[in-house]
Length: 136
Image 1 (cartoon, rainbow, N blue to C red):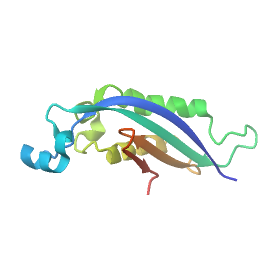
Image 2: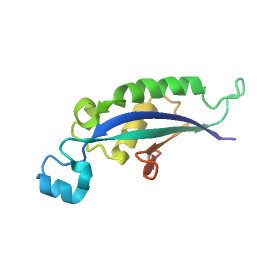
Image 3: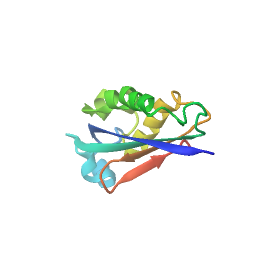
Image 4: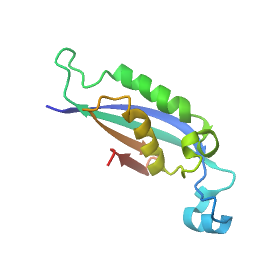
């Protein structure tokens, strides 16, 4: 029996979608207003999902208090109220699209969660735009 537990969190961050090797015109053509040289922000909603067999002693797939602490230390402290392009090392050369942010979060959490548990990240950039990544 495998069960999935979910933990929601959020963070607010600014970013700019652009390629350094393109001029402003090309960046605007591809990324639109998201390429604003003065950046823009989002209120990101995050769902971290962990799937595995419940521990027979505790009944937990994963202690949600531990998951909450991991999300706080690995994601919220690193990303909340930050300019992702400027203040988060993972995005120094990586465009901080929702897709790339989800992969970075997955990579940060994957090493902290039991190998026999599956991990899935769902990241809402807006209420209507979201991505899901599960390490594939």
